[in-house]
Every structure is written in C-alpha cells, then in structure tokens.
Length: 88
Image (cartoon, rainbow, N blue to C red; front, side):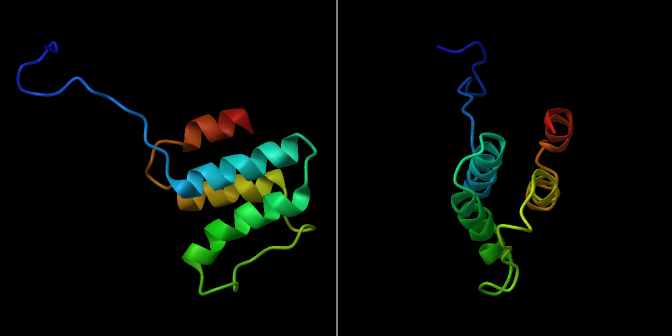
C-alpha cells in the first residue's frame, strides 16, 4: 500500500523520442564521435516538424548551440530549459 489511498505513488520518468535523439546528438558532438550520426539523429527530429527534409541540416551547420536552440523549440513547456542552459 502506498502513502496515499486516493492517488498512486508510482512515479516513472518519461522521455520523448525527440529528447533522446537530441541527447544522443549532443553526446556525439561532445565526445568527438561520428558527426554524421549526430546529424542523422538531429534531422530525425526536424523531419517530424518540417515537411520531409526541408529543415535538415548538414554536418557543417550542426553545433552545440544549434542543438540547444532545437531543444528550446522541441521541448517547449516541458521543464528542460533551465537545466539545458546550465549544462550548455
């Protein structure tokens, strides 16, 4: 039995797929990994928001600041902005 009889005590974290793609792209850039893979993950988020590949970026255009800006747009009102700004 939980501590409250009216409401469940089960809390579980939820991650959106777009958040996971942006986290992966950031980790690849910070770790000097395969930048083409980071661009692929980033563009998957953009393809959902734009019509097809209209919003896709190239490897030269992708940077940590671009990812931060995309996180601000994609995760608007989801409580990530402050921790993103501290981390970046």
